[in-house]
Amino acid sequence: MYNEFFGLDDAPFTLTPDPRFIVFTPSYNEVLASLYYGLEQAKGLIVLTGEVGTGKTTALRWILRRLDSSVLAAYVFNPRLSIEEFYHHVTQMLGIKDWNNKSELLTVMGRVLEERHRRGLRTVIIIDEAHELSDYVLEEIRLLLNFESDNAKHLQIVLTGQPELRDRLNQANLRQLKQRVALRCNMHQFPNVDEVDRYITERLVIAGSRQPNVFMPEAIDLIYRCSEGIPRQINNLCDNAMLTAYSAGQSRVSRKVVEEVARNLDLLPADHASPQALHANGAGSVLTAEAKQELWNEQARSGRTAPKSSVPAAAPPQIDPRANGSGNGNVNGNMNGNGHGNGNGSVHMPVRFEDLDDEVLLELGDSEHYF
Image (cartoon, rainbow, N blue to C red):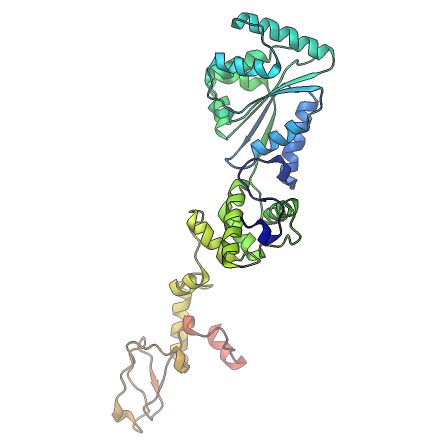
C-alpha cells in the first residue's frame, strides 16, 4: 500500500521468512557460519535454537536455497507427526517409495544413503520447530544417525527450535540423543541498536529504497526497545509505522509514530513513558526526593525570591498588613516555616527546584545555594 509513496519496489517488512531479505549482521553471520561448517564437515547432528521470531526459519531457507546440487535435502516444517507419518514425509522428499513397513523402509534407506555417500553426495534432513517433536520421533531420529560407515556419517540431521528444545534434550530418556549432538548454535536477538539500525536500513535498500533513512534515529531507538531486538517484532513495528506515516502524509517515520504503533500492538515496554508524562509525574528527575527537599529547605533559608510564574497558586502565605514598615519585617508564612518579609509587606518566596524554568540561567553568586 505504501510502497509507491516511499519509492519501494517491494514490501520490506513482511512477516514471512523470505531469505531474499536476510541481513548479514555480525550475530547472524556467526550462526550461518556455524551451520555451514557443520554441514560442510558432515558433523551428523546439529541443533539450532533461538527465541521466537529471531529468524531461524529464514536462515534455514537461505541455506536450503544455496545448497550445492550434490546435496539432497528434506525439509520438515510440521513436527506434529507420528512415527509413521514422519517416515512417510521424509522418504517422499528423498525419493524413496518402494516400502511397505518400517523394516523395508530402513533397508531401502540404508542402501540409498550408502550409495549416495559412495558417490560423494550428501543427504540432509532439516526439521523445523523440533521442540514440538514427540519423544518417540526424537528417538527414531537418534536411530537414523546410525546410518554411517567407519569414518563418516551417511545422513546429516539439523534440529531447530525454540529454547525449549534444549530442555527436551536434557531429559533423562533422551540423553543418548543429546550425546549425538555434534554442534550447537544459538540464534540471538540483535544485541544493540546499531544492528537494528543496520537491519532496517538494509531491508529498505533490498526493497529498492533510494532513501534508506526513512526512520529517524530516535524512532529506531524506540523500535529496538519495543522489539527487544527480535526481527519479527521489528518487521511488525516497521510495517505498521510506515503505513501510519503514509496515512499521515509523512515522508519519514518519527518516534511519535512508532510509539503510537507500539502502543496499539501492546509492545511498549512496561517502564516506557512519554517526556510529557515524565514531567507531569515528576519522573526522570536527576535528584532523589530527599535531595530535592534539601534544596527546598536551603532555598527557604537563603530567602531566594521566586519568579512570578513559579509562585504556587495554591495556599499562598498569609501576610499581616500591620507588618508594613514595622519591626524587622519578618512575616509568618507557611512555607516550611521559612518566609521572610522586607518591611513593606512583600515576601521572599523560596523556589521549588522542580518549578525552575529550564531556560533560567543561574548567576555565579546564586550557585552557592545549590551545592
